[in-house]
Each structure stands twice: as C-alpha cells, then as structure tokens.
Image (cartoon, rainbow, N blue to C red; front, top):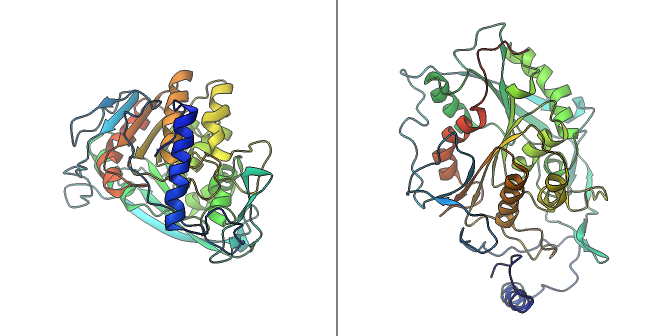
Length: 389
C-alpha cells in the first residue's frame, strides 16, 4: 500500500504495518540486524495510479498518443506503447549518422581512478540515521568505459555543433531517433555522446559515485576528460554555448543528467530523464546534501532561484519502490518524480512530465514510443540558424 502526504496518521500506520507483514512473509530476516555481506531483498513494485491523491494533476491522453512536443505540464500515457513507424529505421531513405567508439581507462583519469563494492554486499543502515547507509566493502578498483559518438550525416566538417551527453551508453535508440528527426528537420544536426558508466550500481560502486553524487564533479569529468577525446576521435567541434548542450539518462543516469545541469548551468540547459533516481542514494554521505537527489524536490528546487534549465521526465506506474533497504521513506521512484513535477511547476520551470501506464523502470517500449517527441520538446526553442561557439 502506497504512502503519501495526504494519508492520515492511522492509515499511514496501517499501511506500514501491512507492508512490514508482507515483507516478513517474503523475507523472515527483515527487521534483524543484517551483516554487511547480506543483499537486501526487494518486493515487486506495486502498480501506482496516476490519480493518487497528492500526485500532480495530469492530462490523460488517448492510448498510444504522446503529448505535444511544445506543451509544458503533466501527462498520462495509455497502456499500449507503440513504436513510431519511422523509429529505428536506418536505411537508404534516411541518411545514417556515423558512430565512432573508443575506450577510456581508469588509469588515465585524474577525477575517477575507480572504486568497486565487493560482490553480494550492500551495506547497513546507520542506527543513528536511517537516511545514511554505511558501506564498508567498497575499495579502489580499475575499470574501462566505452564512449560512443554519433555524428549525423548532415554535420559539416569544421562546424561547431550542438550535442547531447547520455549516460549508460552506448544508446542505439538515441542514434536511430536522431537519424530520423534530423532528416525530417525536426532537430538541428547534433552530436550525441553516449558514455558508458564505470561499472557497478548504487552505493559503493563507481557508477553510483559518478551518477548519484550531488556535486558538479561528473560534469567536470565530462568537460575535462571526455569531450576533448570526443573532438579528437570523432573529428568534430562541440559548442560551448549551454543552450546548445543537453544531458540525458535513465534511472541514476537520469538523476545524473539533472545534477550535471543543476551544478553547472553554464554548461547545460536541457535535461531528459527516464525513471530518474530522485531518491536518497548518494554515497559517501554528505551533510550538505543529506538526502541525496531526494533533496532536489525536498529543498534545492523550491528554495533556489529558477535556473535556465528545460526538463523532460518520465516515470512508469510499476517503477521502483524499495522501502525495505533503508526504510527512510525516500526510496519511491514514482513519488519522487511526482514531487519533482510539483516543485518544477511551482517554480515556473519549462518541463514536461510523462506518467506511463503499464511501464516498468526505464521501460524500453515507453522510451521507443516517447523519445522522438521528448527530444523535440527538449530542443524546441533552440535557434540552429545562429553560429554556436
């Protein structure tokens, strides 16, 4: 049973009791002191109703229909996720971009020398602070990452191009969507830089360190260590204009996309997220941002001046819900994204929020259905006629 801000104390108490009872059936060790090496079990995410009290008011769309690419606000997708007829077509009728790939080693990075968490370990909750996870099994470890660079057929050598940086690459769906949209003049010719993560997931891992840390470090890593290699390896020139730069990602890659723009708005003005991990998953613990990316909707966006960022975001009705790992009430992906939409609206941001029925975490069918429209929404006010430097 889902908790939300409109529940009465009695209903909330009953909900918690029911949830704990269900978890006890599935995992009898729940509630005991777990050793560091124990991996916490997860229940299957419940299906959430977009009309739940406390969620944002949203426009329900006909099944299979996307919101308009120029409309701000909140929208609900129907349960059937149809792939656009032209999506994924990279044939003779559509000019195909070139994808250049190269590998980066941790030994070459001054910013991310590499960490990893021991297999089959997770961490323990600080008994004095349920929002803080103690991880003792993370240690230095090397990694390699692949970087894939999409260069559209329409790119003029020597020209300065807009670009989008994506997490957890390579991302062939993005490359195919750009082929089609650029050929149809729905997007300007742009470079796509799809960066692989440094391995692992969540607290204590290299991927978690890169994507979940609330700071400007990952954007600085991209700027100083990745983009110069992209220009050299792909023989392109990338714009310095933040209006011509976008970030995107799914899950922790989605929170990372916003983190990049939030801490460095002089570098990025456009953010696209699927199932963004706007929850409490930062590690190491930082008292300046004690609730990790949950702090975006809890404090950072409401309490700061509006930044020049346009945001497109999505969440699925069966997105992640993990109350039994830390029990801090900050591990509900649907609620986190709903609250993101609420605070973005209150502050007057240009944003589009899509709640997808019949969809899981970073749902591939939803991404195929919505990515072309999402990219158009993201870039709708970009002036491709101006010379971008």
